[in-house]
Length: 506
Image (cartoon, rainbow, N blue to C red):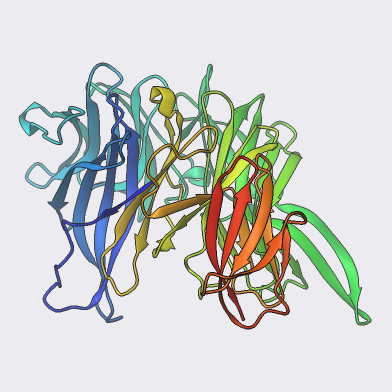
């Protein structure tokens, strides 16, 4: 674990304008030498609501996978920074960087493909490949993909009869144009993700968006981007009439398919979908309980075949957001989410869960930052399979702000497949359990990952005196007789690992 300061931007006061730096994550890859490569958009949001956000440019970082130290960094100022595809070069050594670029002199738009090595950010633009894409200006999207055949798949929009047409195009990494198609209006929304590989043989792609009555529509297209199948996945889990104080109400349990939703295929015409999980009565969002869930659907029958719900802070007033879903090369699945009691406690954790395609949980880890307020990564955040020998595992990236600081910190997370950290934790603490509510009034609850066994739970006051010790019934701690204040919770596992947390009794 490690945290990284945006040193290229700190101290720039933008002519005295007070505000906050903003980050949007575009790319996270692991190069062949093992180093992580991060690229993102950087902006600045003034405190004055009448001022528009300032676009600053793109920043690039290289991070050692063995020591989690900064190897190199580069900031490129640009008032209109491009979206990038950044990936390992499938035809040789090094990496490729691709983006759409408009040439005003020629009134044409091109696909630019650049190359750079693992050990350097240097790009010799004289060697770039420029392939004509379209006459005139196009509206680009973040929809890039390097597919399983090593082709660049991109999405862009062109004006057409007072509206826009959505194009999908295929290019080789050598710039060779291979195919282009205009998508039907039903799947051309700007707000839904780009094409993602659904199957390698036959080559198919998919994308998803909200459908009628807020169900989820998953579209399957063939290798020429022509629609071949559409599945409508039902959001409702349970709906019934209940009576409360002689008043009949509708109690609902359902999945909220929105921009946080993500879909991944897991073979056999089945997909996993992560989404917010909501329980409410009489359609009342104020008293609703929010968790997150992963559901399994059969694309042929459109029936739900499984469901697992995560809610670390049960009760009203909770918030929950899925952040990512990814299947590894060995078939296991990682689910990343953020859940917190309310905005007053922004230090609550991001949780990573390892499970199989049948939704059986192997372990889960609560990743908390020390002194940071964790901010959500971009929609469709970046989970990456770290596959460097003994360091095999999962990696993802987030941003955080320390109190009284305007600049952002980049926080890169990585865990081995067995849930261990394996490197210095730095500013990030990884727990195999979550605790709630914190602050607590009467009871503090702990939810342990299924792969760990606690041996003792202790509570200490600020003077270091042990005031409570439990050798069993670890899931509940009675704090009702304790005076209000701050305490230290000490959890010891049977393998000898010890974790400490500050808890507050109201």
